[in-house]
Image (cartoon, rainbow, N blue to C red; front, side, top):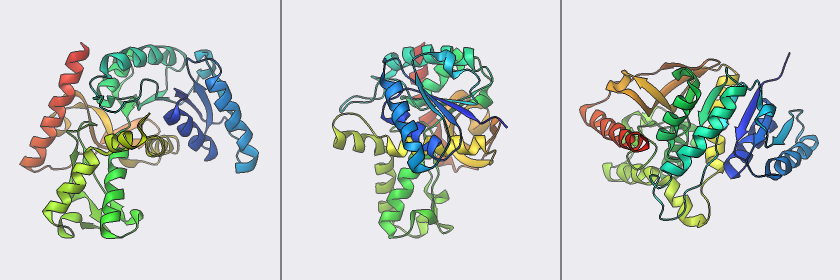
Length: 308
């Protein structure tokens, strides 16, 4: 039986750590691609040399050549510039749009049946670039944002209440940015909504910290941005797809009328399996939540329009 194959484009912190998680779980052989000569080869070799100690037989190959990526089941796109302190996600738009377009064209040519997972920011807009460049159906172009945002929300909920993160669940919908929509009444601790466990003021504070989660890490690091939690979140999506687990994970999906939104990538609960997006898990929003969701979708549309 042939092993799964995952290509990770971009050998920076997010890409290399994602490659490490996939290989060390024995989930797939990994090809790490980057434009910089020697960088993916060096990191690939280093990861391969850890295999005897960690105890897995996944192959890790670093390369500058997209021919090595041929026949990938999943292609993860992390390439692009990371956000610097004081830099808005919009500043990244034009630069990363060009990068994502070129790498997706190259990857799609060699792996026409692959599922694309876009991680590059500004996330929702980059998903549009990937969809256009690949010409893949919407089931095979997904954005990783909601898993990360929900993980951040869960971390803060667990800290606030002094409970295990395993017993927390959180739903964060909408665009990946300041307009994201953390749904407090669907966010629970052992099944109990946090709105019954915390004051409205504390809930709002946690929601706000979640929306600024990426910026908080960037401000502390001063150079570069988060990569441990983003790579873990990307891994969770890869795992759900390759193992056909039908996990319900919040992802950026090209909506076709769901949540009253059309022709836009926005974060929603999605059932992920071997075919990629199996279906959108639609939940009933209150008028206030729908309004927040619509505002988030409008912010995404503005970025997409700027891209032309």
